[in-house]
Length: 532
Image (cartoon, rainbow, N blue to C red; front, top):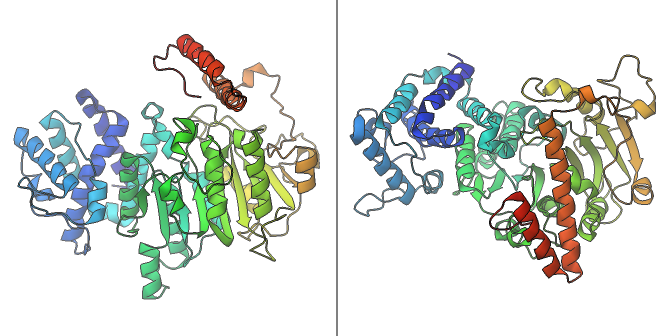
């Protein structure tokens, strides 16, 4: 039985559990809670587990021998014990911080004992020897991807497409001994891909000395995740891939735009896809007092954190929506100028629409290096040229029926070059995915270079740079689906409203803004008003 077969078998169970009020997202969390107990049993049986052992009374054998209401009640007791670290008498029985983190506030949503029995029997019926050989982590990530594809679950915001993650990692080329951070870790996809890249280059770390292996397992990676249930998925994902992290695990619970982010050490590499949308409560969730430019735009705040947290010569790749590239506020302009001063922003990859699970979102990947090749500590004028690869214009509308894959990113990787800091010799001109009868000139090239002077003098320091003519711009038959168009329009309107709200606040017209927001809330049928 292959991992794909196992993933499908586990996923099919969710349709049964939906009768118990369990949605896809809840189901993955429910699986995590059981899967760790099962994995602890399998690894102990195989003699592979030295750490993260569960206490007596909370092991797989305490579950799979029971049935009915006794099973469900005992499962609830186990979750309570693993969550609090104490048994029913209040005696401490769990001290492992990683186990406490995975089971933090863990509760089952299951109400029918027969459904829990089905889950346990299914897990017992899987050939775990074959699964371990193929990689338990890959199995688990298959479930996460299934969950992300189920757009109604809302999980897509935590899941960056695997093909994009792997391509970014191949460009950035993380090395053994480097510290690698993701300040918006989600389910830890970037960190796990970076670890796999290093393991592939070092014969699964065997080529390293013991102290260097220990560093890779415990200290090389650090992630931050705000949502406890998502962090639980991330911790499980990391453990299944052999990444243990420090006492709190690889992914710490906290807000990278708050005190947690402020306390992070500088790193060699940052890989990130910060969450889309504005922060709830605006500036209320951005409490950092060490960020130079104040903004309620989460992505701009994350961008500041990322280039500030890099060591001299450090490398970063960050996925950002279009508004970060063109937002014409004081903060937006200042942050982009500061980025191009302190870092060599050498590459922008314009991504096609439809590759993320939120419809209509237009995104880019910014690649930059702290300082310059000659002087990594340089803090002014580091960006001389920005190379842009347009993988959006005249591309297919990707989605479930036309999936985005590695083959779409290979031409970009080729022109990016072998040097991870973006300093390989580059030449304009790349015409992949163009019409056969297109003129192969620079105007039709997907790969162009723009000077810092051009960006300042012609673009007004906007990084929203495009030049290709959209062949389908007047062909209604080739337009994206109506829901995608509507989502794009609402996204742009929301951004415009947010900027107007900030302008009114700056002009001291907060009361007028509140009247307009209350009116908008009434039109949209929102009871508690609108937070822009």
